[in-house]
Image 1: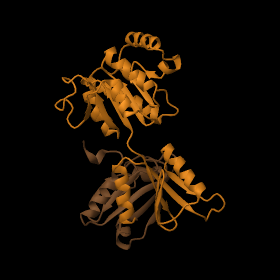
Image 2: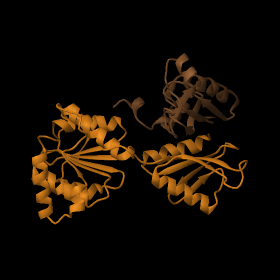
Image 3: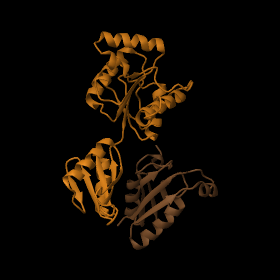
Image 4: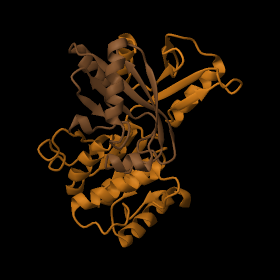
Length: 238
Length: 109
């Protein structure tokens, strides 16, 4: 691997720019494919390039071989997308466990809470904190298909605006802490706010996989397990 | 956060080692069949002192890959390695990996 290619790859990852490193396994030459540019050792036909960008969008690394000729090209497409994001609403005890657990799982974590007493560096060392109201924070952070949103405050004034924003985004996971009774009341409020049945059904609540979790750390594990299941577990009930 | 556990930082590790003047090779899983332990795209960096970061299997083939990586660091030639992780082999090294993997090993210039 040429040092220049490696440095460009590292720079793209640092800047959270999606990029694919394409290696010609026959020659060892490499090219970087960006969403709007190509840089490197060999050019690519437009249809191959389109296929690579499709794989980037699908977050799917893999081999691309010549369908016409088994001794033809063999390209390995290694997709490097920016980290998945987790937006946690509520700088509560469970969030203190969930933030490091999610970071360990590879997520870029932001904890959102306008209450200064909760969202402190002392309680969340090294975690990115956002002190805006949740609906403003989500408007700023713009959840996309690679974003999970979890509300943990138990306070409708904070949770509900976050959920409304999350459900109207393309977030791949929306979870809300609260008992079945709390959740039923929440769904009623959200319907009153004009959310459709399909929209409110997207909420995972009570949040987390059912593993009998009791402590904040255990509940964090159940939430992270559910997020992982929704992301990866095509044939698993989540 | 312990960076060595993070999901996807092997190219950064390789760049850091290279910048420190060490020879470096990167191994990448390019194809899998059956119940291979790590998915396509999994990576391991190896340096000329034998330091390793990341993994390309559940610990079954890392030693063999590191051995090939040392050759690649020497001659600069990339290598495409195929491993069928049979149950017998898995038994020998005390791991039940299963599956088949193809690993591409390249040196960092």
